[in-house]
Each structure stands twice: as C-alpha cells, then as structure tokens.
Image: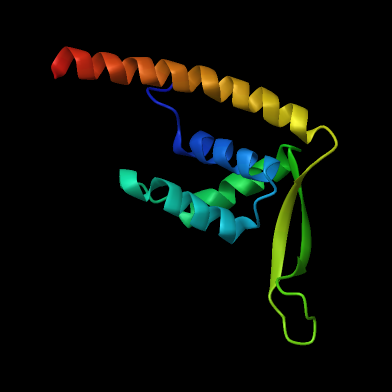
Length: 119
C-alpha cells in the first residue's frame, strides 16, 4: 500500500470527473486543474495529465474523437482530441473512483493524525 495517494491516481480521478461533466479536451482539462489547485501550490505536470488520459484510454474507460477547435473549417485548423466514456467506461470509472475514495479517506486520516499529534 502506498504511503499517500499517487499523483497519477489523483489526476485520473479529476479527469474522470471532468469527462462526466463534459468539460473539454486535454489541454482545457489541464488548465482547469492548474486553476483549481493553484491556491495549494500544486501544478499538475502536463506530461502526467496526458499519461493519465492515455492510461484511461488503454484501460477502456475513455475513447478519443478528434475535431477542429473552432466552428469554421476554413480558418480553424487546430485539431483537438475529445474524451468520452466507452460503453462500459462509466462503470469502470465508478469502480475506480470508489477505490480512490478509500485511499483518500486513509490519507486524510493519516494527515489529520499527523496534524493533531504534532501541532
């Protein structure tokens, strides 16, 4: 058992939630996480976010589709990759989140104990 929750598990948890909420593509999800956690001094590494997305695709949770970023194909050339749940991806995601919740609860308990015992 890991000492604390791994960074990859933490990132995957948020990516799953963002796909549940239909929130954007990889770069948008990265920027949203940066904004969400900047008050804690945490900047999720871009490489870790993309590795986590790749793992979720490999694990059959997500699949990718591509489309042009803008609405006018004559001037919008940037292609973006969107992530969606596979047919059984929502169930796989639910089970993964349940497992991570158990780890988070254990970590929070350890952190509360450390704070209580030492401060």
